[in-house]
Structure formats: structure tokens, C-alpha cells
Image (cartoon, rainbow, N blue to C red):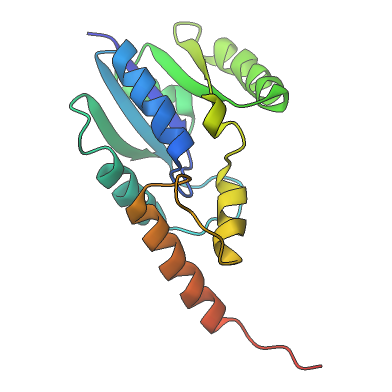
Length: 169
């Protein structure tokens, strides 16, 4: 049985992520969606919320498991018995960033293979950062994220906007 791990922050999980998950779980016997606990960026959702959103989005996949992790991704992959790391590529800048990370990971764990899947054309423009911006400005999220993620985004952002101090001219 070949296990692959698709690591990321998934803040939030997008339909682009689900596209990669769908395609990767058709290639591997077991796919673990690894949600990194403390990425070096501003997070909208807590680790527990990101895990719950991902679990709900992947309930129909029999060979997908969602787990949180900390530390080095390659250590997590080893711990889970993984032989491959899955990454999605949208554009050239993704390739350049992934190439640099892959070179380091190959030094740290030469037994783990990197498998990059090109984003489907309808998801090449998606990024969690852009989706958060669209949501914060009241834009339509249909087709960008699963319905339950859209609800969570709108709830979180409306609460955040209510708590933000108002500025006076």
C-alpha cells in the first residue's frame, strides 16, 4: 500500500485543493492531508478549525485522512509511512518555490518522492489569500470553496469586521 501526504496550511481549503486531493487519491492507496500547525503567515482559522473544515470536505473520499502536524514535513511523512509528497502547481512561481523546497527535502529525506500535480485550468487563479480577500470584500465564493468553507469564511470575517475598531475622520 502506497501512502502519500499532501501538506499545507489550508487556510482555507479551496476547490483547487480539493481538485488536487481528488486526483491524488486516485493515484495512491492512502492520501493524508497534513495540516501544518504553525505556518509562517497570518492565519484566519485555528488549527482545529482547519482540520474540521478539511475533514468535512473529504468525507466522501474513502482513502483520505486528515491529520495535523508540527515540525518538519518530511518527518511527518516518515511518521505516517508515506513514500510521496503531493504538491499542486498553478504557475511558474509555484514551480520555483516548490523546486527550492524539494531540493532541501531531498537532502533531508532522499526516500520521499515529490509528486507535483498541475492545477486544473479552472483553479489556476485560486489561492487561499485571494479567496480571503474576496470574502472580506463581500464577493461571491461560489465555485471557489466548498459551501461549508464559504459559510465559515463569511461567519469569521463578519465577526472580525464587527470586532475591528472603527476609524474616525
